[in-house]
Length: 132
Image (cartoon, rainbow, N blue to C red):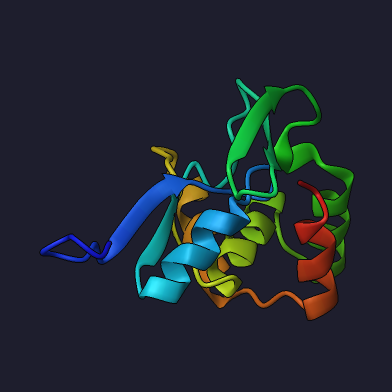
C-alpha cells in the first residue's frame, strides 16, 4: 500500500468461521480497511476449511461439516435462542466484519436482518473461533 494513490476502503472476501482469514483481517484492520464477508454462512455445496500458515496465507481444503450444521454453532444457537444462520452472522458482525448473506427467501431475509440485534457472549465467540 505504500505506492497506492488511493488506499482501499473496503475488502470483500470469503469469510466465515470455517475460513476466518485472520492474517488478512488483521492487516485490513491495521491499515484502516473495512472487511466485508461474502458467503458469511459458508458454502453448503463446498465445505472449505481454511488453514492459515505462519505467513498468513490461507490454504483451503474440502471436507468437514457444513458450517450451519457444526455442533458448536448448533449449541450456541440453542443456548442463545437463535437460528444457526443468525449465530454465524452475529459472529461476523461482532468481529467487526460487514456481512452479505445471499437469499431470495423472504423469511430467511427477515431472519438474517434480525441477526443485527443478536449478541453472543465472549465465550460463545471464542467457541465459534475454534471451528476453523
